[in-house]
Image (cartoon, rainbow, N blue to C red; front, side):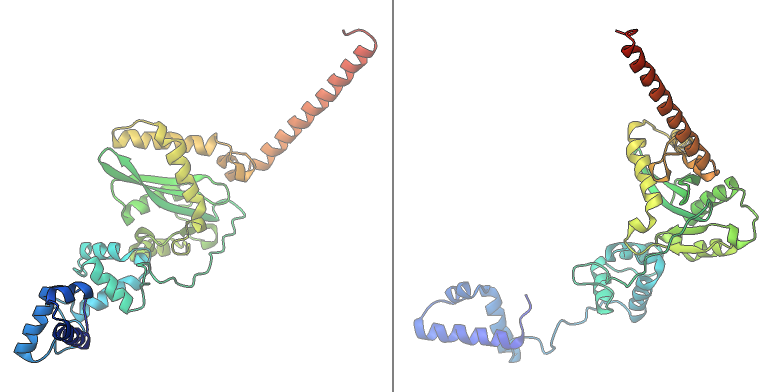
Length: 339
């Protein structure tokens, strides 16, 4: 622990005074004060040599390998960018190195962020005032929620980009990739737009709103340019608030815990086929509680009202049949025709 020069001087004088008055040893005094004897002796040697008990400067000296000013600025600039907003100081240190911006340890990044007011004392980034995104999906292809998740494949991970329609809960597009790049994200969106017949559509109102978190693949400049060129507006969830993008997050949980954990696969192609089978089942045969227990495809294609009405009619017909059947049974019993 660093001690101020005045504190060192006070301790040395106190030990000297006690020794003169009581005759105890240096070791005994240091033990009582919880001070290492060698440290005490080092202070004395320093005083004899330089006439002081500590360094001439207040506070720690600047290390010869300290960050350059431009490196400090790069760290601060990175921390303020949207694509890095969800990263911890440890993750930021790695990303800065991988992208060739700054070579700095996690603790150095933490100190620079804290000095700039971008890091709290508990290691978490300072919270920003955020507004909850307003999501209003009143028809298909109005708002698409999307994200990526990793899936274990033997000793490696592969990445699944998926896009779900908020109104119907239908998976409109997806792409399985060996990497989590913007290029892989674009393939998922190309598939979705093609599946929904929206390729080449220029009129912005008919194109869906793209809802996502602030991940690197979502907020990177090339991703923003991709959506801007298509005429698709991006909407971002609040930082570290998964429920703002709950539609795709919920689907990933269903995929992993209700399906994949019961499947065996050893190759990329096997996994891709398993995913295709599940998505077909999910879209066309799985009844979804939040949309009235119709399938996402039925909701997406405008068939939900008809399906629900036919279901209601069948229940009503069954109720009438039971009423008539029970009434007839009661009459027969009264006439003694049924035991």
